[in-house]
Image 1 (cartoon, one colour):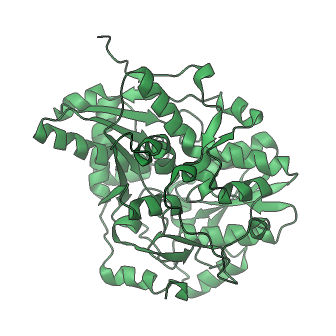
Image 2 (cartoon, helix red, strand yellow; image 1 turned 180 degrees about the horizontal axis):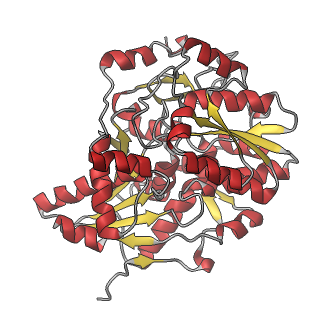
Length: 456
């Protein structure tokens, strides 16, 4: 039998030409978004002031199984896709496991992550509608970097509200965004009404994705010919990211493989949703019994300790309400967490799948995550992003279970990006300065207290 290569690439001709809409195959649909004024299900036109029209349509489309990828987006995809499917032979050897470990590496572009897959799509649709600018938020900076690249290519202005804690920790992410003409603002800021209110209530806050989303939306709806775009959580984002799983599935078919376990890091859900989509389709149809494992930080445990409830997607409570696993829009995660997995809620699609038992979830302290990251880097020569390191930790634990049981399972995980802009975090870990934070039940209750009364 021919040995499977360390890295396997599909050909350009084999690059998927359509995105996959997982909702079309879900037996039980996620609950609808609710209009924050009426608390009734949103209509497509309700979203037009926030999103461009095609993205609003994609957000609510639960029936179209495959959606053609426009040619201008395909042309840009070809600059860095297909991305490699890698076999982690050295990690397998280091662990002494009979498991076969694969990872889909999404870091081969300037943004250093999978985020460019949706950034290009959202920038394209905004430009096609005739908009002149967009706004967004970013946590660790990967999404802001990716969107800056995309907006630069399609000729759009961009304001990025970057979570203040990350803005201070990662100045080089800011510099890369500025290379691509992105205007980067630490959030919360004095440039918006909601930002000023948050600062008045909590002047020393390091911010959150919920805060940054509120500022970005306010900026979008008060700026002519401008709309808001989001890098995770939403249905449209998981749609665009489905290319990750489609490529993975095709590559594994060619190699004669199929995963028994798929592991992904989970913050808002873009990477995990994109990776599992094509495989979840088989699970939903009864063809397979693959396990899907979401790995989240112990400091922001929306799946493992959150509530399944309607909640605002932002701290300023101006977005539609989504039914999701949430810690409450008022939850402010610990600033000491080094990764970007700090959103208070989880994708409605993934929340529904988790609630219905199709997905499992685990959480880890960040020192354990960085231990896994260093082990992986030494074995596979790629320095992973802290977000990706959560998936690595989950995959290692699954492989060690195989070592104990003697089962030779096939494990696939998502390596969402590289960690070269996260050296402050790596330095803190290596010097012993990194600490772990796990919120108490009392800490979480403060966030739950902010849940809207619709849940009553």
